[in-house]
Length: 268
Figure: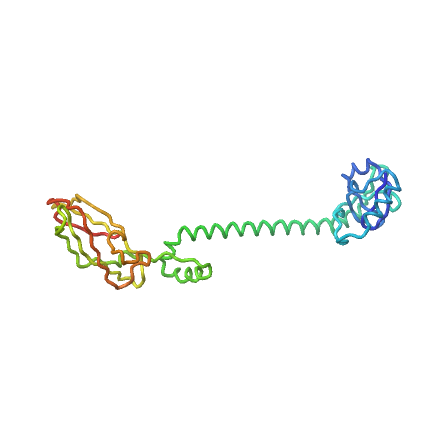
């Protein structure tokens, strides 16, 4: 059988035992290049010569040779190489050491670097995704932090996102409370009150909880109202509650009865 070096075109004679022993890898005895011998095996010399001529015909990219392999120390006999008949293939220990240090080691380092760099990029992308998810699910708590808020606002300006309104329920006050029998609806109460946001920023309208208690302080009736239920239609609930601007509210609720002697308002 015959094979030829895809780099220097030297044609060699080769045995099947040599290919099997070296896993098909061949080192050219002329130029020292290593290639896959399985891809260039021919029974007749004329066939090998014709394949050689066809292989070296003009290509679209003459600089790319998919059959050249670095890092192996096996050379085959023939017109340009020496064959060791004892083991079926040639192995030069000195050349092996040189090849391993100059080619195999360097190629291995390059391959490991590329692989590790790819893993690093993947891990970095996953960590970034995790961080973004954490920021998204905790955005309300983070946005309420006075120290973090400016940085988050700057980040959102770049990402074209919006932050939730800051919340400080302790800065909302209910003033001018008035609970009386409804003048037009029997068995109902009419509540008039005014909310004021004393925080220095706009915050969401709170959920308003009204609790009625008896003479011993035991709650006997309670009701929660969403902003849309206690604000007029002219109020933009989504815009939030501006600071230091009185907001009148009107509630119509069922009368809990004569047992209710006190009431309490809470913001949730």
